[in-house]
Amino acid sequence: MTHPHVTDKHPGELADVPGWFPPLDQMLFTWFLERQHRQGTHGDLLELGVYMGKSAILLGRHLRPGETFTVCDLFEGEAPDGANQAEAAKSYSSLTRQAFERNYLSFHDTLPTVIAAPSSVVAEKVAPGTCRFVHIDASHLYEHVHGDIGAAHDILLPDGIVVLDDFRSEHTPGVSVAAWEAVLNRGLRPVCLSTQKLYGTWGDPEPLQEDLLEMLRQRTDVGLSVQEAAGHRLIRTRSRGMKPPPFPTSRHYVAPVPAPAPAETAEPRAARPARPAPSRARRLARDLLPPVLTRAVRRARASRA
Ligand SMILES: C[S@@+](CC[C@H](N)C(=O)[O-])C[C@H]1O[C@@H](n2cnc3c(N)ncnc32)[C@H](O)[C@@H]1O
Image (cartoon, rainbow, N blue to C red; front, side, top):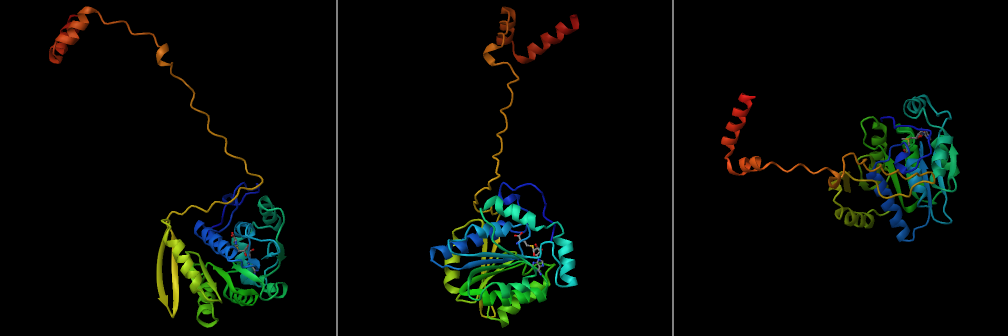
């Protein structure tokens, strides 16, 4: 995981917030959350692992009246074990709760409910069967992800969506094991895969997949393939130069100042002094003498000079 560029400035746009949330996943989150809205699905939102708030800021935009958004992160706190502590020190050392809150409040009027603790506490803090969307992006070590998936299973509504980050990255084999274990042994049904994330449900994935395929087939910026594996339909997506979906700018956004027009250095044509008209002899030479002869005349003149 490369370290995103961290700044202490207020973000003007979502792109200014450091994090790991590619355009393809921004588009897929937006699509899943808008579809839930269109279908009248109500429920809370939950994110485990916020870092500087990039994905949380997008999630918060889809919160409807009466719903709760809860986020959980260690922030500057102690990790529950040495391996998790090493992971946090290596990848998230610049994180502070203050930085997350500053970024979040740049785009939203109120903070979500913040749990500053290991994700293992979430099962006690968030009521079962309340959430319509859970993003699991905290520790990427097997034991933690296994626990987070179990908590998501209990917390989600029957047709809720769970997203598992880094389910196949080279440096996160623990997430891969926990993700496919959940598919093969814990009833999780994949809906689709992006380069970085697995989208799944413990409900019926088929109606979702049909709608998703219809949307994806109309896009020219998504590479798409469908495969069967162990009785699961896997919709694979990848970005083909995708741009992030439109997202409102923050309260600190300053529109770029247009570059000044290049200064007029040359004199306007009309103001240039007119060239003196060529003499009659020159005009005759130019019009009547063939080029070779003209060159010969020039050479003869030069040798006389
Ligand atoms: C990959 S980052 C999250 C990225 C974020 N979702 C984004 O869009 O940029 C992982 C986050 O999980 C947090 N974390 C790591 N281990 C955790 C644990 N056991 N419990 C809760 N949060 C944890 C880290 O502090 C870090 O902020």
